[in-house]
Length: 202
Image (tube, rainbow, N blue to C red; front, side, top):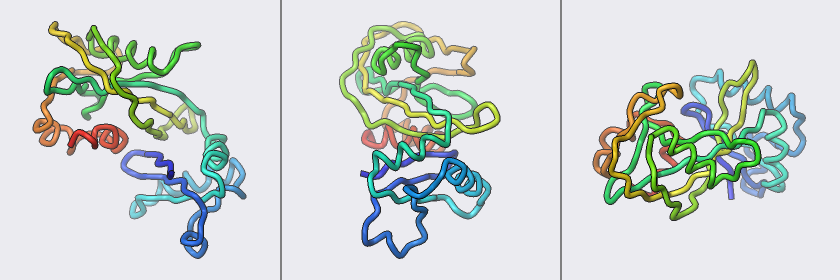
């Protein structure tokens, strides 16, 4: 199974080395030092015409551990919340997003996901119904870059009260959308990692 890591609209893919990759210009992650990973990544971010960077490795798990060493590694958790036939989205920094946030010390992903959704949306009565695939994305962090793993969960709620955006987290709006509204509003103005979370809905 490949690992996809997002940086803005770009993708970094870590995949198993096999016969089909041997003669292609993929980067061999197993032989790379931390500084070399960063060098390749930073060059990739400056390339305007290249949208995908692929690393190959003999072992996906070990290769990913090697890749992680080049970044500050952060854990987060969030939710795709359903209420009848609608789904909850937040509007932050001019894009539609899903509620999520970093794990607190000693906190598990499920606990963090519920807490963050409650805090960011002013919602209650959340129940986790399904574990979704985690996402990975890289972003600037304290003069370098952080790699964030976000655990995702499908949740349901019977919350009927007012939704309250967490303004101190730059959240301007919290809205319920039908699948049709998601296609019209969210798909063209969200993040690739978020689209991968909601893809199964559409």
